[in-house]
Length: 289
Image (cartoon, rainbow, N blue to C red; front, side):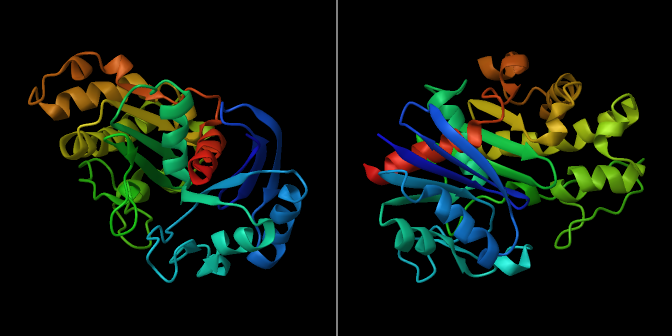
């Protein structure tokens, strides 16, 4: 198969041509501007490439209800020019091929369970922590949808008593994104995360907040593996700290082989930051099937 993949992010759009095995033949990155500027550039990349289907993993919120009048739209996003953008319709009209559509983080989860370390597992969570926080949830062998899709980056978090930062989420203030995303780290400490690598207190607090959220996800969704990606998680010193806090916060309530081996349960992404675009190839394959 010859498939197209689009990982549509708020800062950049990654376009690729590949196949059903996850092999990528060609890939480019295009800045995310307004739909009028960006969509024609994206369409031009895919035109004439002979793709049989296109898979799109898109920033959200998006409408995934195929019975909805606004299926395939970006909806109430904070990226104001993209509100009510019919992104799926634009590509269907221009390319005339099937289009698979899901959130960018669901695409990353799909990439990991199809091509990465989570192959063979039926219940997996992929969480990206960077400029924002998002989670892709794969349950009983399929991506989780509901009235829309998970927005697990906005679970509410209990602040630690020594943290005076107020949080910066416009909607919830002290949700996970408001306390632990890259802008929150910079807002709290006055420097970007990459400049704070040697400040143990920075990462201890970050690990505490991430662990709180992971415990909530574990209790509600009972995943077989939790994968952490995104720019903040390039700070690899976070992983043992997160695992330690998860163990404490669980309080020995859950006893499974996964929890007994947290080093192989809470893990970094495995596909060299290509899990998203590879997941989009799988979205395309599924759309074609």
